[in-house]
Length: 445
Image (cartoon, rainbow, N blue to C red; front, side, top):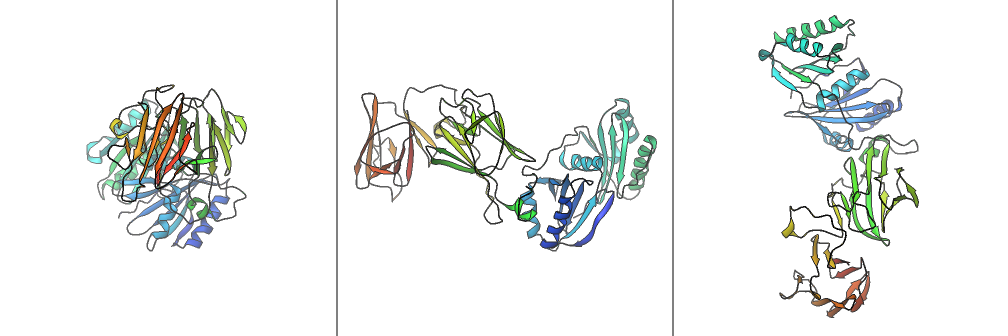
């Protein structure tokens, strides 16, 4: 691996062998200095290079080297990977804000132009940026070397390579860049990249460590992502991890959490991951969004908070500690409306009410409309919904119309549970949970 030597303004931590306790003290030192210059922590060995960017006392972004350059990482994945890296070393650099931003642009953004040094007239490219008064970043990359020239509205704002020399004067910055490029050209080929999209983003789990947090900085980011537990009548329907930057909630199928209930608006609310934590925002819903019983347009979320949307509650849980997996669960939840396999890939129409009652099969995430006067669940081939497997109960469940009601009747060796209670017959109500052996169905009228 050819290690990228990034530019810097000063070395805060000389190269030293990586040790988890020592790394924790380094993090504590840099995260505690909220008014100082931004910091870049580099951890590397002969095969891989990790970079962690810290600004305003917060971890901002992380990345790792790969065959194509660098790829972004969540803070959790970065810190977890460091623990498995063999014989790494760690270095800490101080950088100014413009260099901090320029480095992230280079590592995070797709260049507008990327050409070999033998195919480009560099002076002409720089003249064009200056004549068009553009904001841009121009870089030259050679194995082990990175030179950066930053433009603000067509004016050279800074030139960085290795230890920043702080060259003054607009002309001197451009000349300094070109001199360094021509020196590089005598040693090996290099690549020129031009960036005009200067927008960067933080890691999906980047956030400030609470002042009252008693654990280590590493354990804070290695803790599991927040959990969202969707409940109806205090009965959990679905639990999943918040691993992205936002989750939308509403009745339309393109939402991440789809709640098929008329008390829920088509696009009801959204939960954002922000650097300070998590925020829920109402999207102008008809019935509003409640946070801990109070109607809010926007509110900050903390562990233990309860969100109420229509008849549903969503518990927001934050867990800490280093144990447990970080498996990413499906972020699309259908409660309880879902399309069967025969409808896969087809967009669902936005309907206010269906003509038929429905059964939602949770194990298969399939929906069965009761189009006639009855529907049968059982092991026989004649059943409308077949129970599969050697251990499927020998039971026949008939859901049929009786006047305005729908009645469940069970006949078999094993009892059927409705909302946790054994029953052989019951008039079904909206959202009743029917358990038949290991299978669960939700009734929706």
